[in-house]
Image 1 (cartoon, rainbow, N blue to C red):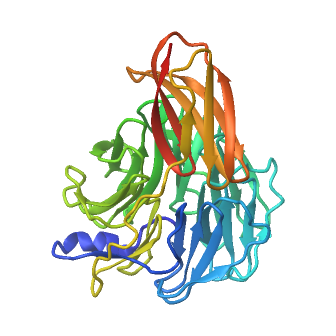
Image 2: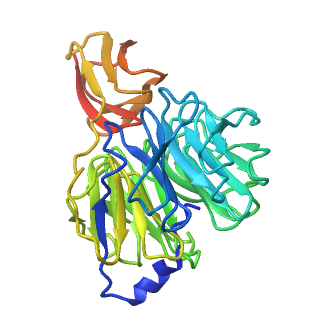
Length: 418
């Protein structure tokens, strides 16, 4: 389960002298995309999912060695997340209309076909108990939850459009009580259910269009939560100590923050598309750059141990003893190459986008005051290469900002119309 709720998270708050170190694992190798997810059943047995040009890797020795697992028809797919109920039954979500299941620990994978309507993408997965599985999507909309109570043999599709426009992360305390997060037309949101997804309550809502609650972490008391808010303008740490009755935010240096992981109420790490491990010892008031890692998406604590793993442009491991910081792989993953030609423009906006693998793209338009004017492009591509767009641009003369979001991250481009 991606609950990050190992008992030691509570216990270490009583051990202020505890020291934690992160290292970059030498394998799996660095990638031009990134590893979107990592999941461990115990300190030794785990899996990693690479995003672009998707691949799955498995380790049985705590990350010292990894073996690639072949997923049929994987060419060109973007693997978003991976989750296991037990050492045999696991699930792999993609951003390409495919959702996979394994019953032999990942040796072979079969496409899940009995979901209707079929989800365009699975952006979040969580297993709970012995047979319950939840999933959600998509970061590029629409919003939905899928659920199975029989280890993935049958599935229920839950339309979430009444609550959100896009969903990214899903996290359950037990089979009935859980949370899902993402965004709506007005900003970042967190929803809660106490009846297995039949009904939902919005327990957090703030920000502006384009903000997401990207990742969530729940402590064993089921009241302490840490979350990351990705934004075009200001990334944030979001936290509550009373189960979501009240929330507090702290600014984070990278607006495109995604990964979050805390070991106490005050000590933790965050990172995003433009940052590696940033560490805080005072609950997010200040941040220290550890100069390690890049394009972080997930920090995963292994239940019942003092170890954790993280995914980004490589896989990273945290322990409390015996490891020193290794700065290999500290570069961030490259953004899409996007050309506006010409710029300034007249009545047509011509975009040349160089895709490095299958991808999704949303281009939003803002004025210089930060007012959102609308999305002018949304597209999904199955192959790498150059794709050209010619868009009508019926806005007054002036200066604008293009906010470009893809599976690789976000970037802003200044645009001038004559």
